[in-house]
Amino acid sequence: MDDASPGMPFAVDEDAEECSQGTASAPRSITPHTPSHTLSAVSPDVPGVPAMAHSLETHFRQLYSHANGAPLRPDAAKERAEPLPQRLPPISSSQPAAPIFRIVLTGGPCAGKTTAMSTLAERLRSRGFRVFLVPEAATLLFTGGAALTEPFATTAGRIAFQTALARIQMTLEASFYELAQLGGKPSVLLCDRGLMDGRAYMSADEWDAMLAQNRWHVLEMRDQRYDAVLHLVTAADGAEDCYTCEGHPARSETPRAAREADGRTREAWAGHPHMLVFENRNASRAVRQRAQRQLGCTVDATPAVSSTLLQSEVAAAGFADKIERVYRSVCRLVGLPSEAVTLDRKFLVRAPEPVGELLREHNDVKALHTFVVLQTFLRHEVMAKTLKEDDDDDDDVEESVRLRRGTDGFASHTHRIRRRYPMAGTAKAPPMVELRRNITARDYFTLLAYADPHSATLHIRRSCFLYRGQYFVLDAVHSRGNRPPLCLLRTSLDAAGVSTSNSETPACLPSFLHVVRDVTHERAYRYRELARQAHLADAPHTSA
Image (tube, rainbow, N blue to C red; front, side, top):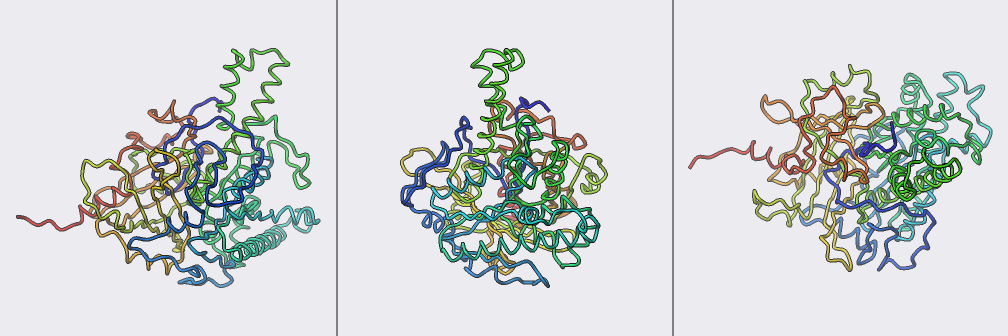
């Protein structure tokens, strides 16, 4: 697809309702910034990442301060309601003032993961975080002589190899996490690939056999273990001239093999509740258009030398823009005020029941995962004000817990907070800051005691899937009675393309679904509002 196509969807944040609207800035250099030695007045690294008025620890204390809710216990995740035999090394919750985030950077070969990790480490340290870089376990094995040749070329050999690889990955992550806990500071673990990457190099039967032998579970390995997954698309897809295997001893793939590996990796992580994909096409589009305007002609119309120089400059600037978008997304993931780099688009659709059967029968639907989701909003004193029908302003605080259960009954639990955050030295409206964390079943049921009495628990059948390489989430929101479910399809757009495509229906939406209209900005289709309306529908009516 042409890289000048505006508004190409590239990922979807499963929980996102809306992002703070901001204009995408021009790509910047990815030169590391000098770390700040104070936490009290940290300066922003890029436009759209404003300075905070106080320390990072105070920032997180305010985010986690409950008006009526119960604070999470520091040792919460050391307990499990249903412990699994030989389960993965436990990762415990940290104190509210010193959270620890684990973010996976994955993707195909030559995607920019090494540069992204280095840039993220420098910039997050300048914002006051302690940053730990967890190395790629596969590279350790490959450079150590354990290549995927005999005796690892057989089915049994691949299972043994991937089992050893997963155990090394677990040990590395657990060790770095323990070191982060010792520091007692807000920390970020940047993992060079994660446990699910091995799925891309095994057949479905081999993968299932490995899980059964070790009594591991996909939801525990994928959803509960990592706060977010950032998939950087290989340069072989959209930036072919930049693809190279030089400087990487463990890389030998041809461009075609790199694209295939990238696609398999994307499918392996599909289903994670917070997966973002960063494509090369979106990263270079705005840069190419600006460069063409400066020259007054297209790349194809320039002389050969000028065209080569322009293409080289566009490629370099496009890569810098890709890394910039990764950084802004991470700022939002770790609860820092930041302008949006994606806009979550939400479409009202009509689909026959059951939706899952429709998706499974379509040949272009890949990596389909279905879940039952129970989302409960929690009460806050600030929310106790009387709600007016004509009040279109967002709530200052929004807090919810979510249970996400797979088809085999295994469940994961998430706690999410959105709050307006006052910024220093600005008269603009405070932006919404969002923070979400995986919690234990015990904490989930503890927080349920603080459910908002004016909102019903939403019962959602969620389908996550890839359609022609793009990631979508289709929610069927069920209500009591025999009424058909409300179906909402969500995907995300590059913020740079919002101005040209925000009012249009993207052509890449699944063709087998009937799209009624775009409801992104309609308050009635926000999940918070759906929960309130469901409560009103369920409430007993009394006559005068």
